[in-house]
Length: 224
Image 1 (cartoon, helix red, strand yellow):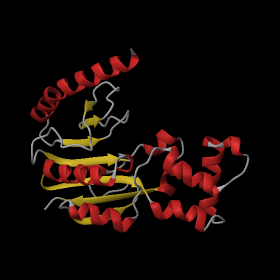
Image 2 (cartoon, rainbow, N blue to C red):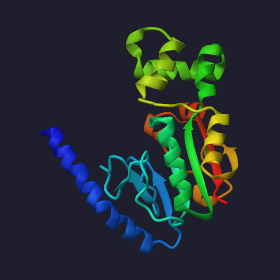
Image 3 (cartoon, rainbow, N blue to C red):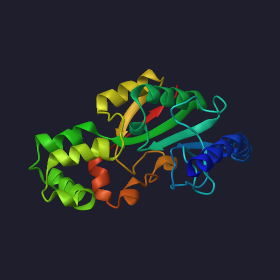
C-alpha cells in the first residue's frame, strides 16, 4: 500500500510540474534552476528534485531529458547530485543543463573529489585525512571500533549510494563534452558572480563544514 501511494504521488508530481515551471518562468525575469534541491530551497530559484517533499520544490529527474524550454535560464546549480546517477545519465544531465541555459548562462556544480577520497588510503596520516576519517567513523561507522580508511572509502561509495565519483580532469571533460566553456574550479561558497556565491548547503546537511570542504570540488562553466 505504501509503495502504491508513493507511485501515485510521483505521478501527481509529474502532472503538476509543467504548470509550476511555466508559472516560475513567467514570474522571474532572471530564471535560475537548481537540480536536486532536496530541502535546500533557494529563494528566487526553480528548485527541482526527484523527491519534492519540501513545499515549493518541483519534480525533475536529472537523469532524463528535462521538461524545460531551451535557452530559458541564466543559471543552473547542482550540489552533490551528479555522483548519484550513472556516468551516462550524468552526460544527459549536463547536456540538458546546457540546452536549458541562455547563451552566456553559467552552471555551478559541486560534487565529491575522487582524489581526496583516494588520499584517505594513500595518505592516511595527513592531518586533513585523519580529521575526515575520524569524522566519518565517529558519525557513520562507530560500531567498527577503529579509524579505518577502507571503511571510510566504502562509505563514500556504497554508504552514500554514489554511482560515479569524479576526479577533476573527468569532470572538466564531462562539462566540455556537454558544450560548456571556461570551466573553472572554485572554492566552496566562493564565486565571482554574486548569484552563485554562498549557495552550497551540503555542509549543513552532513553536519560538518570542514568535512564538506575536504571532500567537495566545485566548478563553474559558461554556455557559449
